[in-house]
Image 1: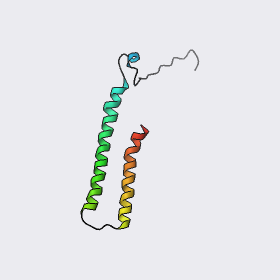
Image 2: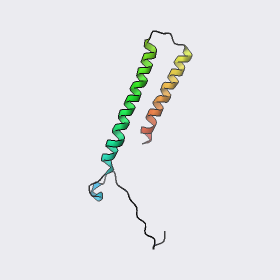
Image 3: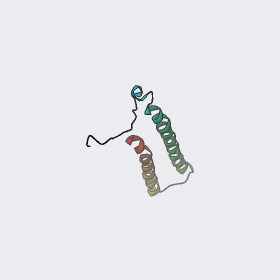
Image 4: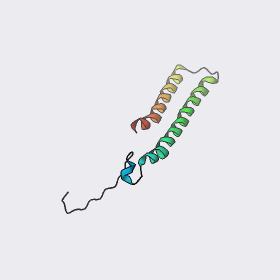
Length: 88
């Protein structure tokens, strides 16, 4: 970038609030990312376990194929719910 061009950038730190006039992304991250993710994933995992328990508690004999498909579905739902947290 040539010296005669003015470039203005914006940013905020997660931990160094003293250089940002007391502002930090840590509170935003905690309140609007971590807590909602944990709550929603808790609900998802709870629903998955309830579905699994309901399938096996009715006293119905499930075929091996149904059990295998349910296990695969359970694993995929678990991975879909956990991977965004792992990536973050």
